[in-house]
Image (cartoon, rainbow over all chains, first blue to last red; front, top):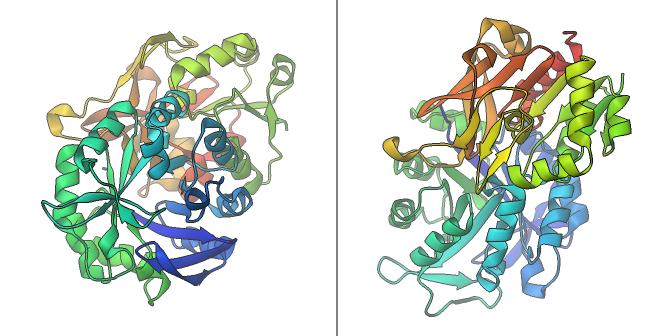
Length: 251
Length: 206
């Protein structure tokens, strides 16, 4: 039986981990290697690492930091940020990443999804989808400029990306990111109804009950950031709680 | 003991190498038929698409070197993920590709449709092993989740299937045939369960 994944979401900036709100106001959140080591020891099901400045500055992600984190991971590692070419993707895999996640770079060059899935398999290609706004008013969000993207249907974009070979969706409720105001389960439902690949959901979780609710709503995996960084929760405690709520967990 | 990880340009060797180093082995990454020929243990890892992978194996003459070492001289081999699927006769991805053909059968896309399963099969799933494969799974008995990430699945002779995973149907999770052991999941990414399995492969003398 396939268990539900709980994925610490780590943001990288200037060689350190940070946590912010709505892709801004970043605060220091620790050393990448020691944090990854702790999550590995506590049985995290996967790790997500994103270089938050790479795409914004139009450069490659911090490969040294990725390599250092990968060395601590005996679980899968997904890396995002600044993946604008096959060459950059190849170097990230060489650092020890298992999957690459593209958000704005895929919007710039959708054909990258096609090319990378042909080279590395669709299981290695993740589409990041940052969505802002409520039901009926949802829009894709461009974190590089801090604004919604006009005229691009987010559902249509997800379907196109999956058709091109994206094997997983990482869905971010932008308005909830770091806000710890609860998860947008309507958004999750809309995404899961639109595509047949696994959906990793992130944004807004502040309590164990929020996580329970998102899994009950059908999420395949949950990525959690602020909730792990600025509270006394850890992966082991989170997974034991969710197992106690009858979710299939690896504990 | 020379543990060789075959590099055919599909990435992710670092994870496999690191996992063997963790067990105290000194793995080497090999790219030539000559290096394959002097190996005591061979690892055929796998991230990537089947067509590109087989092309690279053939272009470099690595397929023949593997056949000579594994099939003719009995060097133990571990296949991982795509490295298991390549053992089949045919792989049906974007196009149909001839595999190594060491095992009968085909690799096809996982059918998620009828049961609304999401494809790829992505994440940690429990596996059920056969008694013949006890040496690889004994350490993890009763707690056998491994990390899977695949959209395609190998259908082969029941006699060669060493473990299955329930994902809509009983999919092949591991095969065992003579001195070849191969797994669909990623032991190098499966924390303690994976390490125990890799250690069992190192201790194996078929």
